[in-house]
Image (cartoon, rainbow, N blue to C red; front, side, top):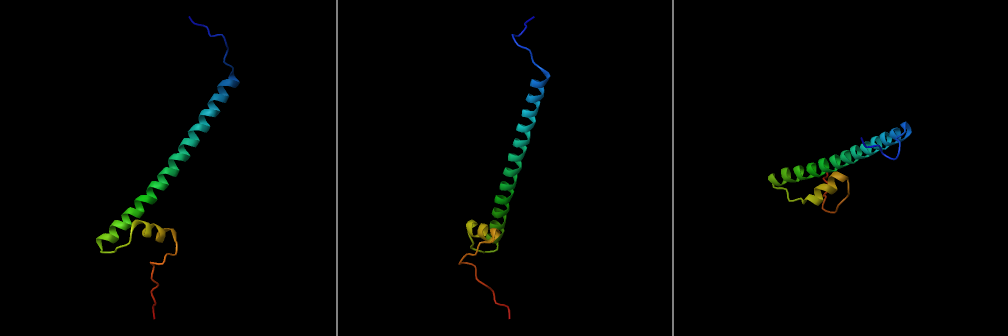
Length: 81
């Protein structure tokens, strides 16, 4: 049987477990950020496609700006009176 030239202490095992847990938490956070970014991109594409079906000529960038609340010159202000 092979006997390594070192011993593994309980402290080393605990540190390895802690590092592994932190890596997993980081990976989960990255996945959540990617999910949010993908959902937002999908939402913009869906809105753009729905508008195009209705004959609206807004570009995806214009739809994105509207969603993000940017004031663009193409946005006409409707006067209700």
